[in-house]
Image (cartoon, rainbow, N blue to C red):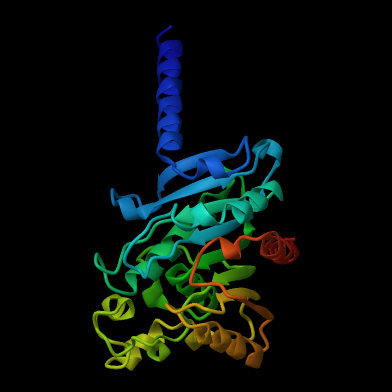
Length: 300
C-alpha cells in the first residue's frame, strides 16, 4: 500500500509540474493540438534561468524518433528568450511539427551577463544535452538542424559552421562534442562582425558581446564571426534576409552566401522584398513551404 501511495503521489507531482510548464509557456497555443511539451528543462544542471530549453514533440509522439530542429532566439545577444521569435513564426513552427519534426527552443546567457564565447558555449551545451538525452525524449540524434533569428541566426550559423573546426573555447568543460548538424536555417543573422555598420561603437550590441568594438578588436571579432569557419564540409544553408532591413544589412547574408558558394557549400539566399528586420513577412505560405522542403530533404 505504501508503494502504491508513493507512486500515485509521484505521478501527481509530475502531472502538476507538466501542467505548470504548459501554463507558463506563452507560445504553446500556436502549435498544433496534441503537441507534447517538455518545458523548462535545465540543460546544464544548474539553476540559471538562461540555461533552460523547451522540447516540442509532434502529436502522436509515441510513433518513434523524430528529427530535431534547434531554435535560437534573437535579441541582439542582449534581450528576449526562447519564446520570442516563435510568436511571429507560428505557421512555420507549426508546419515543422505537422511534418514530423521536433523542435527544441533554447535560452542562452545575454552578453550583459557573460561575454562571448558564453553564448555559443550555451548553444553547444544545450545541443549536447539533447544529443545525450535523445532516447529519453524520442529524438533522432543523427538528424539535427539549426534555425536562428537575428543574433540567434548568428549563433546558429556560428554553431553549424564551427562544429567541425574543433573550436575548444566554444564548449564548456566536460561537454560532449559528438553531435553534428544536417542543415542550418539562418534568418537575417550577422555573419562578419567588423563589417557591421556599428562595428566601431563599443556600446553597440556586438561591442557589448565582445567587450570591445569589433574594429578595435578584429581578432575577437574574427573568432565570433561565422564566415571564419566556412569549409567544404559544412552543412547546407537556407538564408532569409529582408530587402529593407535597417538593423542588420542584408549584405551580411550576401557575404555569408558568397563565402559558402566559394567554398562549395550548398546554400540558398532569399532576399524578402520590402521586409524589415523581422516579422510575419518571413512566415508566409511560400517561405514556410521553402523551409519545410529544405529541412525534409536534408533531414531524411
